[in-house]
Image 1 (cartoon, rainbow, N blue to C red):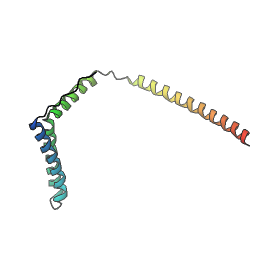
Image 2: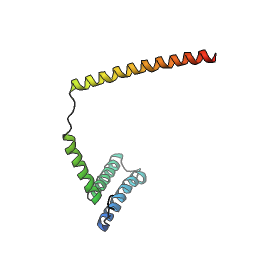
Image 3: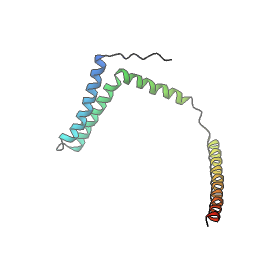
Image 4: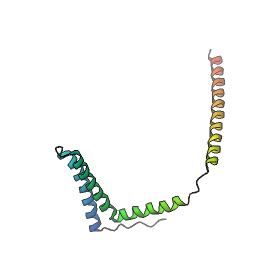
Length: 122
């Protein structure tokens, strides 16, 4: 049985999330409320607000744990032994042969049952 997880209520963390969400909302509002502004300027402003929101979210407890998860996943990805080109080609060929054989087998059974049903029905 697992122990219940206690959540820590940190007012600074909550405030960071509120500000990050407000920055994303501000980025959306910039595009909506300032159509007379240059497209390039609006794009740059929206990008800056979005990046600021991402940086702020990365500074929260959840953001730090997510970054740690990404780093651990990158370490695990380095441990993967990828197949060689020859192994990949052989495996692909085997799969194709099995698919063709199974499709012919199922087509034959379908035809056989279809003829049998047609003979019974009429």
